[in-house]
Each structure stands twice: as structure tokens, then as C-alpha cells.
Image (cartoon, rainbow, N blue to C red; front, top):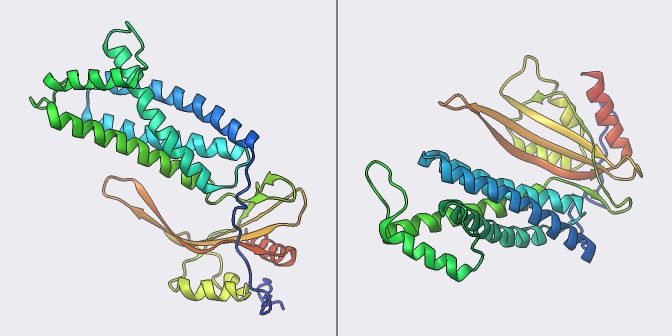
Length: 293
């Protein structure tokens, strides 16, 4: 049934609308590709990171480098998982742990190589631990006339390792969260259409319930936002362009918050996440959006 604004309602009582979930499918070739790409990417990032923290004297910048190092390592794992067509977040989390630890290890190997003026690459973990114990006696760097030694420097090294590990896991685990895979075509869904920004909804629960019930006219009821604001509702459509048999709807509310340092924080609340719809609903919403673009 059409409403005056053109988006149809399609209430489905017998079979509630479903949301996309990864199938969990993987095979040996996928695991091998992920292992290969993850190893190459982690090695490259570890070398860059090790040289950065060795030559950058500012502690704050070193901390930032550590966070970015772990996060981008995680993104490499996630992207490698996408290339190898892995649809299993648990596998990516496990690989995030493995490569997070691998990143810590390789960064120490490269950092010690540079510290000892490129005399020898030390790969033996026991030897590395012995060197760490030796370096902890007098310390290796100072800030504001303070030189961490003993327990203090061990705590710093531990925190650094935890940051790398946690950010790697986070980057790997979240990469595929919003990606959709068409099992029929054995391909990721790339065809996406974003509607013009709609007015912000102050009752997200109500909007969620209406959409879940099939009252899609609730989207057009929000109207296109004029003028633009830092509060708005985002609607995204996606479909598999190969088989034209998988259609999805994503609706979020967005708050753009200007922070004191001038940066903009994006606060996003999920209304519906990758809800599976049919072609009629998809075309109805897309046509309505195109007419108002």
C-alpha cells in the first residue's frame, strides 16, 4: 500500500523481517590467504612502527603510534579476511589475537636491531626477554628527568603490548561487522545507495518498531532534512547486483558533535542493521530518495 510520499508499507505477520548474519563459512584456502596477507601486512607495519618509536622522542606521539599500529594491523587482518571471503567473525578475532602477539614480537625484533646499531637480528624470544631484563636495570629513555627502570619500565612495556593486542583485535573484529556476503553469488555486496539526510528522530525505538513491522512509510514521514543539521537520520540501501536476489536496509541516527579541540565526533545509533527486504520495498525507498535528491 502506497502512502502519499511514495514509500510502500508491507506488513508481514507470518514471517517477520530477518536481519543478515554471516554464515560462518570458511575453508582451507581462505585460511591460507588470510595467513599470508596478514603476515605480510603485519611485518610491514611492525617495521614502520619500530622505527617510528625509536626515532620519535615525544612520548605522546609514541602512544598515538602504538594505538594506530595495533588498529591498522587489525584492519589488515579484517581486509585480508574480506579478500579471502571469510564470513566468520570468531576466526577474525582469533587471528586478531595471533597477529596482535606477532606484531608485538616483530616490533621488538626490529626495535632491538636498530637499538644495537643494526648488528644482528635477534629472533629468539628467550634472548629478547633476557635483553629486556638487562635494559630494565638502567632504563633506555627519560622524560622530564625521569628514567623508568625495573618494575616501572616493565609496566610500560606491558601496557604497550596490551594496547597493540587490544586494538588489533578490535580492528579485526569490527571490519566485517557491517559487510554483507551473498552466498548465492559467492561475492560481497558492494552496490549501495544512500538517501539524502532525513530529519532526526527523537524516538528511535518507535521508528525501529515501525520498520520491523513493515511500515516503511515511517522513513518518508521523516522528510528530507532542510536545511542541513548536525542531527539527522541516515538511510542506506544495498543489494547484490549479480543475482538481484538480496536486498538490505540500514537506518541509523547520526549526531555530529564538535569537540573542544575542533574535531568532530560522530555518534551513531542503530535503528535497523542490514534488514533483509524484497525488491519492491527496495525500489520504493530508492525511488523516493532519488526523487528528492
